Image (cartoon, rainbow, N blue to C red; front, side):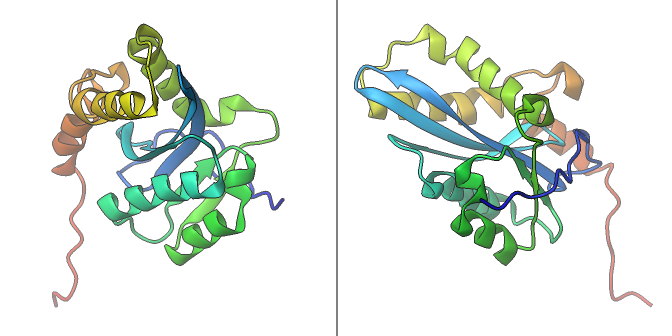
Length: 187
């Protein structure tokens, strides 16, 4: 499988939104079998910008999460899309998706979870704060609950010490006015 260079190289604090995203897959236990969750997170604000869930984990799972992120954020060319070396992230379909959207692929070093530690921390928060407190009867129940956690709680209410004790959405809003505004066509 093709392996991308570790372009991100643990630079977990970009200067603005849509400069670097991290992605990974985790699994959720339900009484009707495993459910796989693919997530894309913006490193600047720690906001979950894309996610997808399915009972298996083909390349389409990570492509779907990334497509949601792209549709919601419309990132500029050059965004770094970082992941581990999983086969889904090395797949032709995922690499083509990044190429079509002018994204730069980055992968963790072999066997080094610290290269994607921000994503691993999100999964720990999700599991400690929600998943391990539930006994999901089936996939549909887990999908509803995890979506509510991401949209209703994590992005909009969960406080982050790294963000000055603001939730990701509020942090992005607060920082937006501090970003330089690009003005073109003025002479």
